[in-house]
Length: 419
Ligand SMILES: [Zn+2]
Image 1 (cartoon, rainbow, N blue to C red):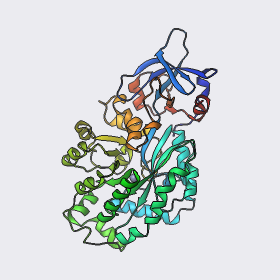
Image 2: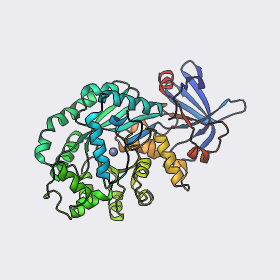
Image 3: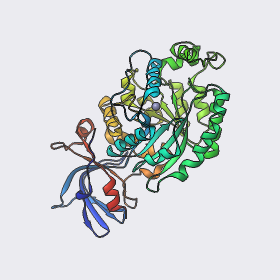
Image 4: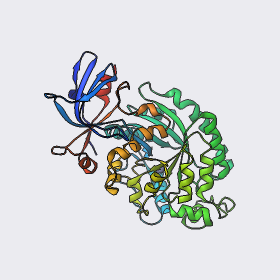
């Protein structure tokens, strides 16, 4: 876990103006700028220029604020992920058993996850919140903005009817309850094709349009899910039968993720979480619908030993893809930068600037909160994540792979320079 440290001493301060000279300034899609001097006046980037002789260059990389597009902070008390042995429904069984016996209150688990995220430099997270989430849980969000996707699990319209008033309350209350330093935005998460009735999904899309709320749905995550949709059989059918919620009318076979993509694209913006098993046809459809963004979770994907993610084909087709950590139920930590490093190790031909937007600016846009992470340019408010280079590491390619980068704590920087 990267340790957060106070970064304020790195700045030369004079009245309202602060200055910092760094080894690299890195914006998504742009050539890296080496040995850069940034001047910040009253919280706004006033000047960026090459360093001069005598400047004290810090061993730092400055990037836009980090964004974790998909996580489940309710699992943040876990020391290690649940075993991925057996089928995916077996893993779900472990989650359900844990939920039945966990002793730490949900608010405290979320608080731990927010703290870990903040220490990992994350300034915005797309968090899935469950039915137990309450307005008091909002106080856990200190120093990190969030889109709180209220999870809906309803395999019958009747079951959904019982959740509707809580969902309306969530959609109405979250934005007004936000603490001033953080932005909290209400979203909706139809959980997955195997837990949401098609009519319920249609209703959730309608609500998303009415409230202009973002959607997030796990989709095409496993081969078992595709078997359920396409054949109405397999481990998911058995799980639903065991749980007493099986309805062969909902899973008659002959269904496909395509129908779900077509429903999701009606909403103002939807995150298609995982998409591990999407086909070339689905990818072409995604490319034509920029309101749909795929969230790829590389370390979670590896945890379940799926075949390679169609990430490269998606990029080539022009699909918007961003990264998420998922939760500690499938991942050892909540560092989105480590997620990026994992991707870069997997795809050595990619340069960091090609994919940096997936954990910063593009991810903030996909969540509908672009102001939290913008490119670092003159005239923009100063918001950044600082990465401290270990001794002896100077090259950008090395940064991609290095295990011991320190992500700097930002709170003090925000206080000092925010005006
Ligand atoms: Zn998830």
